[in-house]
Length: 100
Image (tube, rainbow, N blue to C red; front, side, top):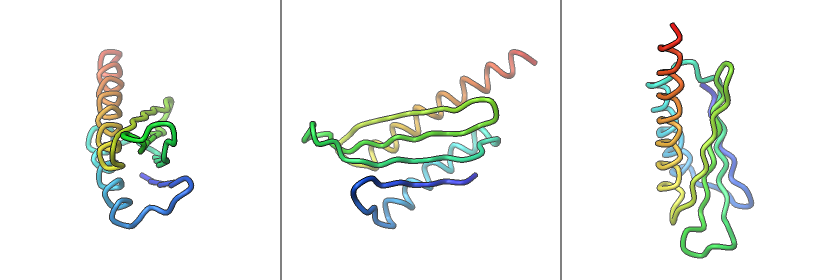
């Protein structure tokens, strides 16, 4: 699985990038056919308290999954977005098992 992390209008440090990659790699446990993952990190100027936004896009054969979360820190936003994608992956996997 290829993971790309894009930080928009700021430079993310290696600690944050390593944290994001470790969280996203855990999704591979639930779905082994993930082709690539793109993570976008940005700051929202409209909201002062929860101004960190993490968007994660998973590319799988036949379907693209997306989650966007806004929190006080990038780590928390990434955790919540990865959890939302985990639920989407499990739902997709369950539907595929029902078909076969």
